[in-house]
Structure formats: structure tokens, C-alpha cells
Image (tube, rainbow, N blue to C red):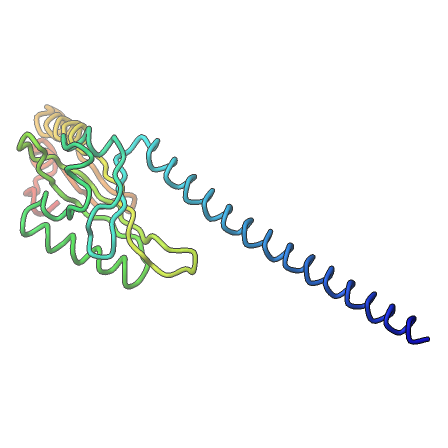
Length: 202
């Protein structure tokens, strides 16, 4: 009888041990799986940034560049190591620095996306017209830990716009540009002569 009781206790003890071992094993696998998922997520994000066709950089909460893809280096002419740990604000004018700082603060504090027109100076000293799209970078817990900036080179677009405006201005026929509501945004002198209104009246 005593032997059976000991045997029963021993059997229960083995069961508890096996259950505990299985539980620890499952928890361990879950931890590994979670860690692997985070690692894969980080790797995927780094790959996306590195291979993005547009200039993309990641900054911390103070605006210091932590990562920048090759497109940023090609646009600005700086080596990657010359950009890392530097603030993007050092590449722009004091006036634009205030705008950049305000945009970054809004992105970090409110988690919103901001667009800004900036003119960074390249390594060769060339002022490059760009637009910056900045959005919040969040950690695994959802907290904002930095910002992702996407730059767009506006040189070709600005040239095309200037060319179109010049064509409109010098066209012999009345030509105007309006928005979707019909508000006139631009009109050449021929329109004023034809309608009898001054340009500021149109």
C-alpha cells in the first residue's frame, strides 16, 4: 500500500516535471519566435530603406541621422559616414532650420506626417530644391522613437514648371491656368488685353 502511494506520488511528480518542462519549452519557443520576428521586421525595414529609389533617412528624436540610403549620398554628394550622427538641419539655411525643427517636433510629439520645402546644400556647395516628407518612426511598443524622412529632388520639376510658365507668358493667344474650382491661378498678358482686366483683377 505504502509502495503504491509512493509510486503514485512519484508518478504525479514526474508528470508535473514534464508539464513544467513542456511549459518552459513552449515559453522559450515563443520568446525565440518573438525575437526572430522582431529581428526579421528590423531586417525587412533596413532592406526597404536601403533599396528605396528615393533618398530616405532615419533620424532620432533630435534629428540626428542614424541611417541613410545610397540615394541620399547620391543626391547630396556626402559619403554615408559623413552623414551619420549629423543633424539634417546643418545642411539647410537658418530660416529653413526653424521650419525643419518645427516639423520634426510635430512629427515626434503628435505622430503626424509633415511635408516641407527645403533647400539643402550639397557637398559641392550646390543648393538643391527638395521636398521632405517626414513621418513618425515607432518602436515595438508603439512609442515614437524617431522619424523617417523621404526627400524628393525638385530640380527637374522646377525646370519643367518654369518652362511651362514661360510658354504661357509668351504665348500670342490668351492662355490661363485655373484650379478645379475655376479660380484663375495664372494668365498671360493676352488674356488681360482680350478681356480688358488687369492681371491682378483676374
